[in-house]
Length: 86
Image 1 (cartoon, one colour):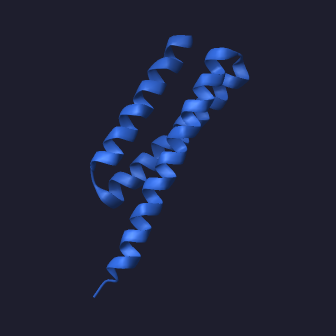
Image 2: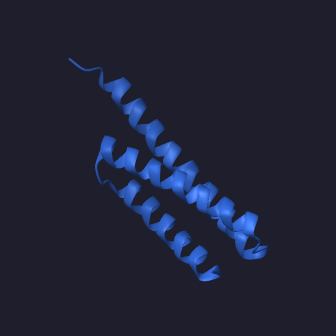
Image 3: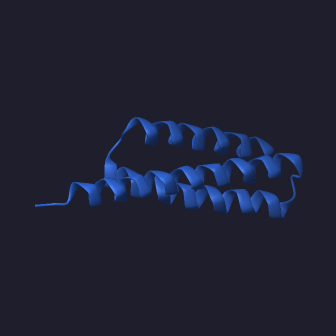
């Protein structure tokens, strides 16, 4: 029998990590928009890659839930903003 408290804690941690990753992307893309240098754009791209891995982990762990879908939508909007820079 699984400990549901432990499972819930792990799931909450996965969502929190995804949320942090998407927040980092938002900040990095904002910096790239403000100062569109090669380094700020590359940093934003790296943050996006990390966030995409977090999305994959969250989807594998939790499936497609509303919090994950909302964060994925936010991530995709940030990717579009970054693509508009170059």
